[in-house]
Image (cartoon, rainbow, N blue to C red; front, side, top):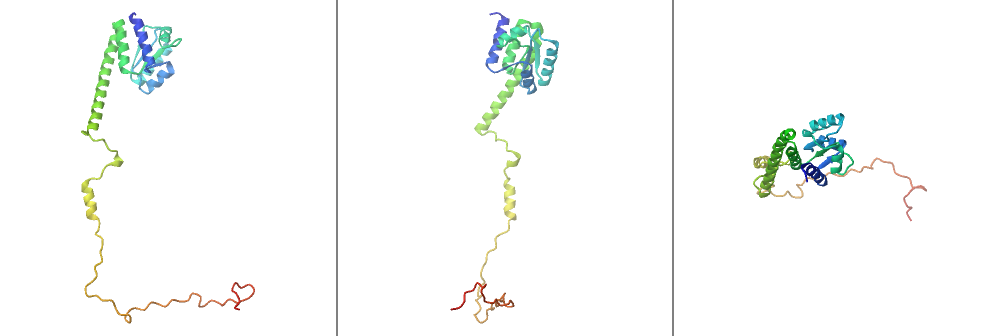
Length: 213
């Protein structure tokens, strides 16, 4: 298998692994989400497609390269009749494809391969830092960051709140105090009759009171 066929078959592997996007609209979507790592443009793509590809790369802050394959060749590699533009969303696979292109044509692709090497190195460093941080959290070396609304109160604040809380009053009976006698106690007020000034109800047919037998 020559180098050209190797690159095309590798693009097919990227597609089967879910790391390749085909078509202008899907490529625009992944570029807008900044998930694209490199955009590959067919050699016979139109100028409008080339301008859109450059715009997608600028929007997604990624590289774009015109590859030495026609739309028909790219399409056959990814299971389509034709494909003018594709996007690789994995940095490792993008780096591998661009390095294969650099082996095929060092003049046009060596600079892009160096840029992707740097990006792949930075991505690997970020992954290593993330794994180390997660390991420290699991082992208890680093505490998880608490959200602003779930901050634990400081012990000093607890102590101050306890000091500010007034002591509960307790009743202590006085010594030598005796209960007054019944004659010296204050008499309760007499209950007033609320119906003292009301008119008496006449008994009659309409009265609800029963007649005395």
